[in-house]
Length: 430
Image (cartoon, rainbow, N blue to C red; front, side, top):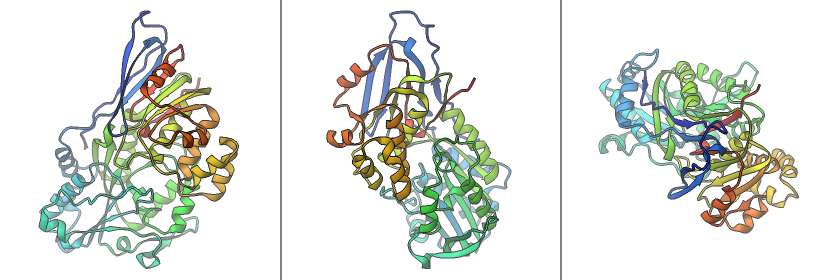
C-alpha cells in the first residue's frame, strides 16, 4: 500500500508560448529561513520544479502503510513475543521519530518486549549529530528500547557474516548478526554512489567497518544515471538476502526536510515502487540544456552543508549548457574538509579532481561534485561562507539579493529548482 504520496508541482514552460511583457513571480525558500523572490519573463523559463510538499498526517500515513504493507503480512505478524528485534534505521531519515513510534505500536500489539527491541543506526560521518529517534515513544518504552549508533572503527562491534558471490568478506554490526528479526527503515532518495539510496543500503557499508566505508566512497560515477547498473548496490542487496531480512518501511523526501509519502512491505517490491515515486516527484528532464540553472538548497534532515550543496551542483551541472551559469541559493557556513581544501590549493577545478580521487577524503563526493560543476559552468553562490573562501573554491560569491536579481536579468533560458539537493536532472536524448 502507498500512503501519503502527493504529486509534486512541476511546470515546464515551452519557450515562446507566453505573451510578451508578462512576468512570472518566482519564490524560493532556501536554508532554514532564506527566501528569494523575483520576476522573470516566463518565455525564458524552460523548467520550474517546486518539489514534493510534505504529506498531511504523517503518523496516520505510517499506520496505514504498516497495517497493509505491499506483498507482505502486517508488521504485527512479522514478530513473535520473545524475539530480539533490531530496527536498522538509516541516518538522517526524515520523520524517523514518527516511524519508530508507528513500528513500536505494531510490535506492542504483538506482545514484543520493548527491552528486546534495539534501534541501530550508522554513524553520522558528515558531522551532523543524530537525533534520538525514540522521542515520540512513551517514557517507559523509550527507556527500555535501546538506541545504538554503530562505530565502524571498533572491531568488537562487528562480526563476520559471509562472503559475497564475488568473494568479498562481509562484516556487519554484531547486533544484526545476533538478531532474531531485522527490519529496515529509511528514505528512498537519489544517491551519487548507489544510484538510489533506500531499503537495504542502511546495512552496508554504514553498518560494517571502516574499510567498507572507504571503499564505497570511491565507487561513485558521475557519468552514470540512477538506473544504470551499480555493482555496490548489487552487493548490498546480496547482503540483505544473506542476512535474511525481508520487511522494510521507507519514506520519500519532501521540501523543507519533510516526508512526502510512506511505503512499507517486502523490500524488493517497495524499492521498485519507491524509485517510481521518487522519479515522479524529483526527476527533472529537459529537452535541451538551459543557459542558467537557479537551484535553491533548503535545510533537511541531514542538515545544510557541503553534501546538500554538492548534490544540487551535480543536478545543475547535468542541466546547464557548457559555459553557462549555475546559481546556488543557500545559507550554509560549514567548514571545508580535506577535499574542499584540495580544490582551494589547485590551479583549476579540473586539476583538483585527480588528487581528490587519489586521497578519497571523507568529503570526496561533494568535493568532486563541486569541482566538476565549476569546470563545466560559472558557479555563483549565495551562502554564509567568507567571500575569500568562495573565490578560492572557484565560485563567485553573491552578497545580497540585489546582486542575484541583476544576475538573473537578461535573455538566458532558465531552469529553476526548489529543494535541489533531492533532484536528479538530465537532458532527454533525441
